[in-house]
Image 1 (tube, rainbow, N blue to C red):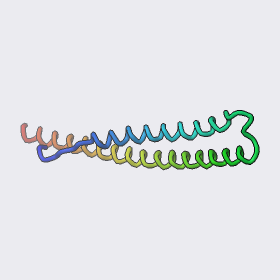
Image 2 (cartoon, helix red, strand yellow):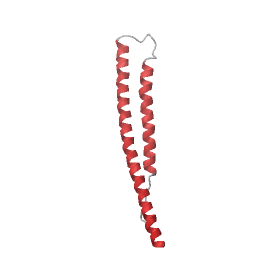
Image 3 (cartoon, rainbow, N blue to C red):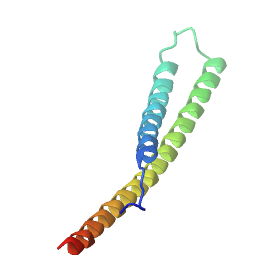
Image 4 (cartoon, rainbow, N blue to C red):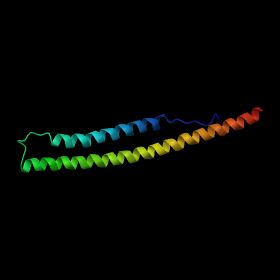
Length: 103
């Protein structure tokens, strides 16, 4: 149908970006906990406890960001699936109508 136009490129790019964000937040979470425990043994006492507390807070924040990014990605995926399914159904319907006119 000539009047029907659909461009899912931006939606596909959004899904790719969301996947990258999920990977990034996961790496932040893992990197923070690994780094905190690789410090030299000279790091002890209240300063070390404060440092570990900060990294634990960082991990919680990265985890929350990861969960939120995953939820947003799932919403974008659902939109993409619905949009693509609708396009396919409309294209199929139009092709059927068009073939009936040509017959």
